[in-house]
Image (cartoon, rainbow, N blue to C red; front, top):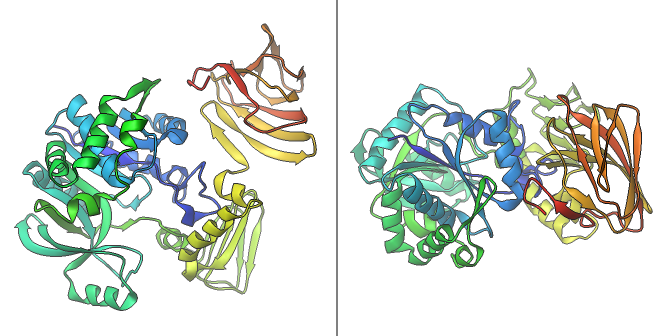
Length: 473
């Protein structure tokens, strides 16, 4: 029976701010190559001799980007489960196990994978996957432990116990993130591994242990699946049921209590990309140890990371520096202090004038394409809209604004109060206040246009959707 990948894609990754934000977290960003971390995760489970289609756990806000990025790399999905509220990994995995037990097979082996890790796939990796699968088939709940290479204080640790064969060990104990002295002692002992957050187990085994050790979590997850409703290609877990689950990790709820837990220490290259120093660590460096992404120039600098989305950044005479320049915010700090970005983002969230910088980008992505904010002022706003071939926006109207659309690339099909017209490059159209309108791209290339909004209120919540092919009306 093929292994069923279960990919957890609902996290927000605030420590990679300002690139990672609530509306577009790190798993959907191309941090280590041309594809996103989520897409790289899908590619790791694309071997049809080992795996079946993946089950994705995410929240409703990310549903379209989850589907679109899978479609871009032709990755089949067995289901996209939408969590109505965040309830940590125990409830998420329980819901996935209940879903697979009902729709695939109760004894299917699940491979639980975070969507935001960087992993180098080689022969050692596949040997570990196959051995873990066999251990899971025999009734073990297997967690992958990464053999430590340094006294890391940002990870939890697992102490190995008795050798169970094929590189699998019983779990002696779990340890939370240690201080530096304890981490060094664990490294020196040789019998500890970093807790990677990746697991392998049969759906039935996990459900049995959840029933015994975390009955409230299992009951909420099962009822959430049973009362779920379909929404286009997505499965919305029942909110009232799922919200009753405790907010607890699968480590606390199951793995630290069960006698079936096992750990497989592995040595393949892995990083959870939890902060900018981890991104620097896995990236290709120049002779001075610098990593540059985007328009960057290094001069007499070393061991630094510069990432820019637009402006050319020149770094002169510095070392151990991180410069992350997004469209609307710049972070500058010591690369070795990258873990401090998390507390900084919490501070930004508490202040009204900076809260939006932690939530949305200047460029927002939608299932039909997206838009970038160009200029805004009192009673006006200018945006760049881009619409994918064959896609169309909802049929909608606004109570407080009128709009002008100028097509700069492609051909637009514009509907205004039931009248359809084609608008070509260098042509424009006016949408008066209160009109019912729709924009579509009937062509084969990306449609780009400039939108000028004028009115007394220009917020995104002044959209009354009448019809929508993405179920948002």
